[in-house]
Amino acid sequence: MDLVVDPAGIAVWGDWRLRCALGRGGVRRDKHEGDGATPAGAWPMRRLLYRADRMPLPPTGLPVLAIAPGDGWCDAPWDARYNQPVRLPYAVSAENLWREDAVYDLIVPLGYNDAPVVPGAGSAIFLHVARADFAPTEGCVALALVDLLTVLREADGDSQVIVKVG
Image (cartoon, rainbow, N blue to C red):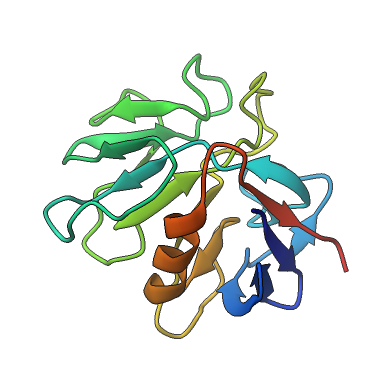
């Protein structure tokens, strides 16, 4: 099953309509690093990363990996590890996946700009937990925790996040 996302902030998963947060830069077909936009298109759900210290392993058909302190994601376009997981501290810019807030307690890296990686086309595009007020993301798709858990229960290796343009 696919999660179909409308730029108005509504996602559809089967018969469910879910509120979601999108990038502060809107939805764009021409995503670039740092623009805050959510990329339009169909992006495979690659795997689930989760905080085992905060919650038990959620049921899912996706491959799963627990994250740990020091896990990061490279967002430096000129680096060989751009748009890939890294260990922190990292010599160049990288996003910390082990956060104090709860937004990265569940992270589903999406198959955006990863096969192959194009420098500068955008990095760290995830499906993750939304803030309580559904504040815009830096380019990701975010759902309420209960809704993300519902999606994960039915997600498998064929599931995608399909982001539509308005």
